[in-house]
Length: 195
Ligand SMILES: Nc1nc2c(ncn2[C@@H]2O[C@H](COP(=O)(O)OP(=O)(O)OP(=O)(O)O)[C@@H](O)[C@H]2O)c(=O)[nH]1
Ligand SMILES: [Mg+2]
Image 1 (spheres, rainbow, N blue to C red):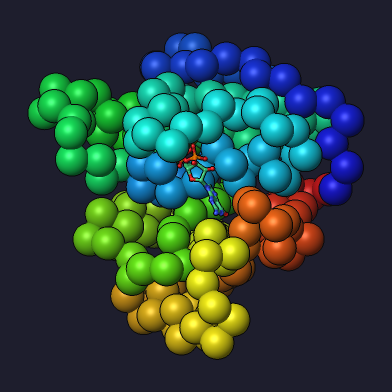
Image 2: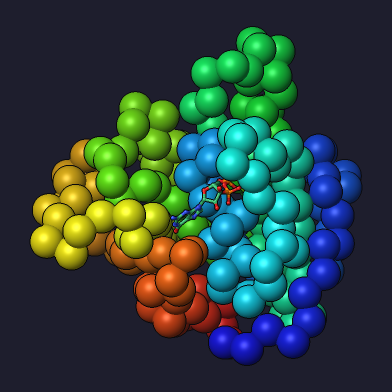
């Protein structure tokens, strides 16, 4: 999909700030620093529309990016970063619950995991949380450029096993560095936003 228009509409911390436009939304989820913002940038071919960082905890709000006046990517803060206070963690939980539990416009969640490692306990909790709300999930196994070809199949199998992926969910190997997997990711996203 060619993105001609990309705009950060709002960085929201609560429901009343969410955009009102009648457009479908695709949200991102994943550990801190796993590559959520980089995934967005690679898909829309902008180097730095979504702010990225080598330090975890860059994204702190729900960032609604409007694309082609057709749909939103919603970049969310990551989880599983140890150096976060209890208060901050509770704030995060409340923000996630508020958005994921009753957002009609949310059509699918792109959950990003690192292909080099087995999904963490936090990843499993996140996946179960999304499934609890009956949301379709596309798991993106990112940083594909960091493993040897021969390891790919084994790692993908581990992700399916550890998360106990449901049949309706898709798993796509991906690299924000090389763009591999991008066409597959777009194909899946399009099927959920009706474009
Ligand atoms: N080699 C490689 N590096 C990547 C890839 N995706 C992301 N990175 C790097 O990983 C780091 C974190 O990326 P971000 O996109 O900021 O991660 P995030 O999940 O948005 O992080 P938070 O907003 O802190 O939750 C950056 O240094 C990226 O350059 C990838 O596919 N390959
Ligand atoms: Mg980010």
